[in-house]
Image (cartoon, rainbow, N blue to C red; front, side, top):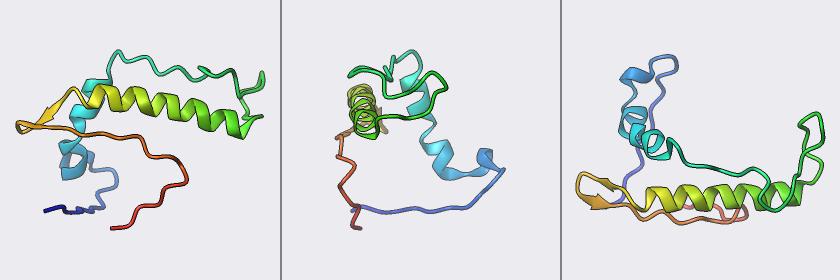
Length: 93
């Protein structure tokens, strides 16, 4: 059964069950290299986005690295199944 849990604990992240539950994501990503310009730079010298399409490609590359890292982890003995979804995909509960 899938479930969606929503909470609003602004400023109280230590008590936020969602943030506590997903703290492992930060730990798993520690040391991972997420290149921001694998397809070339989409930023100008001031750090502003000048090529939105290239920014999307670079974001996807970083997302694929994150999925690769998270797919090697388990939560309470269950393997994680992380899949990159294109930006155009919409969430339908």
